[in-house]
Length: 227
Ligand code: CTP
Ligand code: CA
Image (cartoon, rainbow, N blue to C red):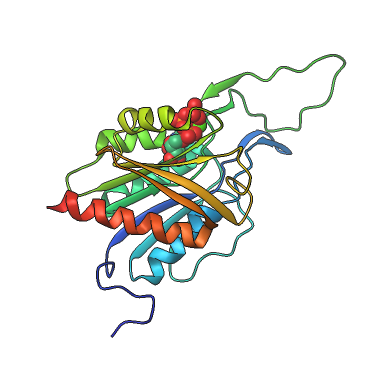
């Protein structure tokens, strides 16, 4: 028998969710990060688990409790996230990359605290690996791959470009500048851009309700892909 939220369609499905920011170390007391709270990814992981999926959540540092029933892997840096994601990617038939992964990290990290000196300080930054792009190159038949896009302008154009460049089935785009939407709050408004060209506006709602809608659409795509 199923509990109220359980759903036969979801039962036993394997899903990987990434969430939260990454933290890129400069020295023992300093790091670069971003404003991601992790709430959207945690809501997706929790809801998928409640529906009966076997969920692995790989998360950067957040203040959120681990959702009940998920396999939880805690990471800090983009590189740690990449390794954790690659280690479980093949076992998961659905992958949702909600994490706000750093695009750059300090080129050098220091074991000792950097002491201040007179004048300016320049930190050289290098690119991190694009985890999702790597998954897009490695995906196999039967796997559904979904990315997020945080944009402050030209949302549709950039979202559609990311579908192609990362070889994903759907991009969940949110405007980080519109009120009630984006990184920190409990609500979000997103637009789903599917590879098929279908565009779905998910109106402003709690991140939990938005998560439900995203999962419904992922299941529709997944059933198509499995055919
Ligand atoms: N992503 C990733 N690895 C990175 C950077 C991003 O896996 N090093 C993933 C994110 O998890 C997200 C998607 O790529 O699912 C889009 O992230 P976003 O920051 O919107 O796009 P970028 O490709 O990084 O491009 P830009 O930041 O310049 O818009
Ligand atoms: Ca980025």
